[in-house]
Image 1 (cartoon, rainbow, N blue to C red):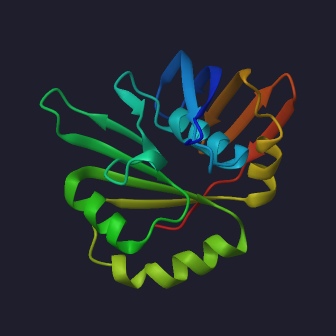
Image 2: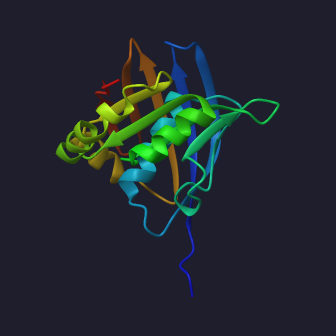
Length: 178
């Protein structure tokens, strides 16, 4: 018998003064049995940083042909493809061919740096790829906030990300690698 996804409910409040986006989202996150709390919370942050009425969580880990999040236009063309973690270069190249913009949010400290050094030359020809690294000590702390029902507030100003909830406050230092 296959393990089923665990359902999490999040009330996400986004105040992004860089993009002039201010909205609340009632989200349902299905956490795959192999997914960690840290990865799920990074997915939530990725949603907030790219929040849009058409941005949706996909099957992600359950489907090799879908990213973690995407935004499609009215014709079904993929405007934005978002991956979380350290995808292999074939997957990234495929995404760059299918979507207008591709963003990868990696985390995990030194392992992310090793991953990026191993794939960056192979991705040099891509023009629609952005890679952002989130520091592991901050994402590990975010993982402790994961709850089946949670309220998370994310404020973005001058590219600084402030995350808060009833559990505390974290400033995420995103590093744009590409």
